[in-house]
Image 1 (cartoon, rainbow, N blue to C red):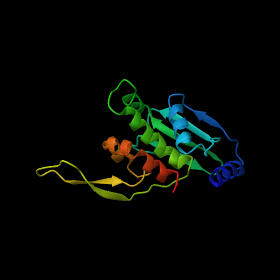
Image 2: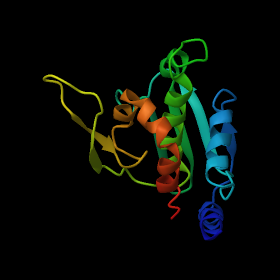
Image 3: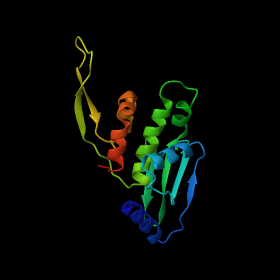
Length: 169
């Protein structure tokens, strides 16, 4: 509840007009983000859009910008969104969720990157292949594309990632 009050105070005290404009293709993922928070987050100042490219983000898949007297803005590269559509196969829904949740972590929760990792054994590895792997501790890992490599790990540990993202004990 304190987080909600702080977010409301922060967004209304800045002196700019609050606005919400979310691309309809991304809206289900924003709704899922709110649901994953335990419904304690209300989005009342946010722009989410699909764009051809992100000038500020270089080769990033998505980017969040915010500042004083400015509505937080998430930009997601259109080609990424198209490549992870419902008919592209694989774990496209998970890929989209990871990217959207990461950027909303910045633009809604104002979370910075969290770059720590932990090492874990990989079962069934033989030969010269590495028997351990590094996994990001948080969905706010600075290279979210590293999480995209092993979406099955994220899916198996989604609740832990949500607890960390929303700082629930």
